[in-house]
Length: 79
Image (cartoon, rainbow, N blue to C red; front, side):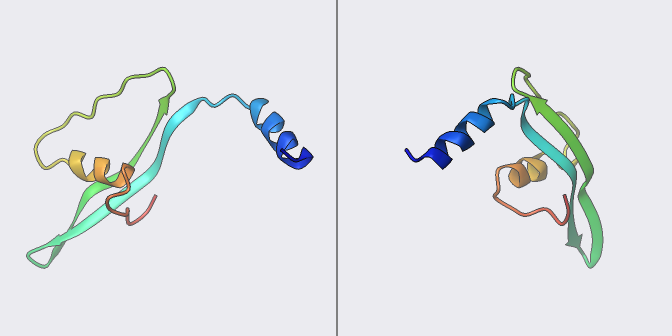
């Protein structure tokens, strides 16, 4: 390892990673029958490294769309 790489690794150890997942203002819109609707509208949350999270909601509330965005299967319109 070169000296620069060692310095970067040492500097990274100074910062404790707190959040394992961060979502900021995620929005996703779709069109149905020519009308626009927000499947996910301005969703934000933080998941700490020692937390457990459940995504709960009614059918059609955007749970699957949000998970697809988080997993990188689809892109958000914003966020």
